[in-house]
Amino acid sequence: MRLAGEIAWITGAARGIGWAIARAFAREGANLAINDLRPLDEPHAKIKEMGRSVLAMTGDVTNARQVQKMIERIHKQFGRIDILVNNAGGMPIPAPSDIVEVKEEDWDKVVNPNLKGAFFCCRAVIPYMRKQGKGKIVNIASLAGRSCTPPAGPAYGSAKAGILGLTRHLATTEGRYGIRVNSVSPGTIMTEQMVERFQGYPKAEQERRIAGTPLNRFGKPEEVAAAVLFLASEEASFITGANIDVNGGRFMQM
Image 1: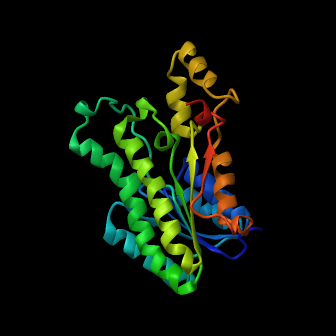
Image 2: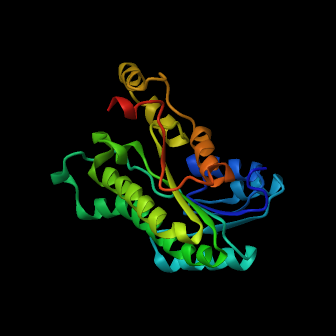
């Protein structure tokens, strides 16, 4: 029960990594606010079954007004906000790797949910955390932001590199208020979407991609959630401005 009684807001929690984080936090005693653009009926019901209080919100993190309304709803229901996990975003497929082929609207569709949304959410929660004198923010970055992964495209890599810069900046400025800010950079994680995509590759391509990871497999959403849980817990009480790579060793070979 490492998060017993704490209030956590997880964005993009309907499925994949976000839903895995929500489950992990609920198991460890946290009460949750979750939001997504997708339906949240099933996550809401399952979290309730686990004995936790939950506020499910349909909300767009790229809309500053909606973000402000969400944090106000969270504070009204729970009275505080202890943890923010900026998970909303994702990588569209296919993504052109040649910047000449990237249209402005396609750039915005990637950068806005991945980076601008995290900015809006951090800006919304930090005043509450400052008043409390404590808080924890975990931003979901990516291997694409740590190195160069051409299939992800320039917009996604730039957005996730921006997440890492935002993490370091906030860790520097907010530490005086007792707020810790860290990030997690997943590699290839077998979410529902990734499983479907991977199964569409020829066998030779599947083997080639797996061979690029020293652990000779891809990750599971629960493995990313474990790293996020650690950073959100008191076990990481003297860690801020850090990034945890969850990529089976692939980063070190790039």
